[in-house]
Length: 101
Image (cartoon, rainbow, N blue to C red; front, side, top):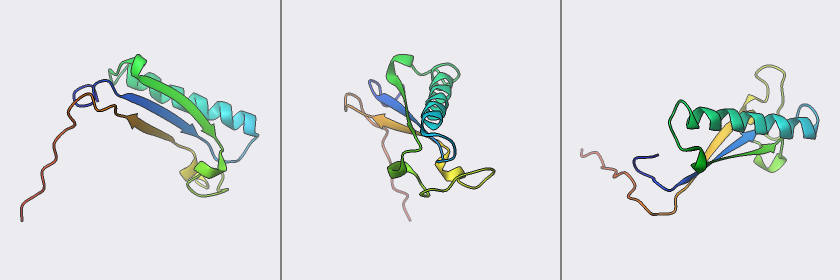
């Protein structure tokens, strides 16, 4: 990110399955997003100023499998963190080369 997309903002989005209360899931989604954001700014070396952590909790319109929920592996698709890169276009993205056959 720092090499090819300088000036980008990374939104770390936390999600949960619908098990539990809405307020608990909102908080849990925020904790997930902040844990990944902390990793990216620490271990991965990204600037904390370019990271934003948000929670969508159990928002139905953002569930991968509507209403799927735990315990165990049931609903695991809804318990996740997603990264959204907002690229302002101030730098040159990496080039892609089509493989020749």
